[in-house]
Image 1: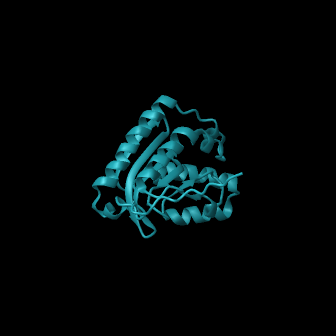
Image 2 (image 1 turned 90 degrees about the vertical axis):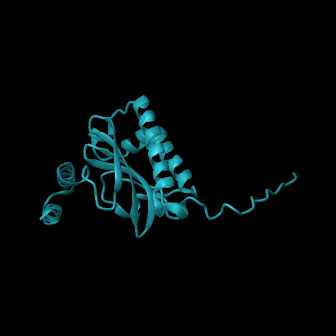
Image 3 (image 1 turned 45 degrees about the vertical axis):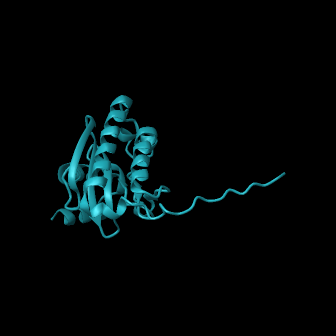
Length: 189
């Protein structure tokens, strides 16, 4: 019934109204509820209507710790720390570009990707919020001290998942760990 309602609304409503419908729909039905692939969910409240959700998941495309930033029931950022060649994050700006919202981590290990996740939240969260379609989200002010504290707690929780979840045994040992460092070439001028 819920998907039929969404499909019908998408066909009938102009996109700006459909987006508002989606916001209300997510607040009421989905984003604050836990999906079956989300395990051991921990929720950190940054401020009113802003939460960070930390969990771990195992999917066909990868496995590892994950973090989602949710504002007013709308998922804005999701970081999937799946390791080399699979770790990525999503930036949801409220526009219909599902194929353009995924960015792969340049970092190779899950631990490095977790650190990058916390860096992105701590340093670039305001930029990501300003990309959003909703003016309410674009003008949202996040308390920097609370954000820093919550980011540190989230980092510890994600690392705890990495080191304690049995399914992540292979993620704890990076594949390139035994490789030799690259030789630097010097050029004389």
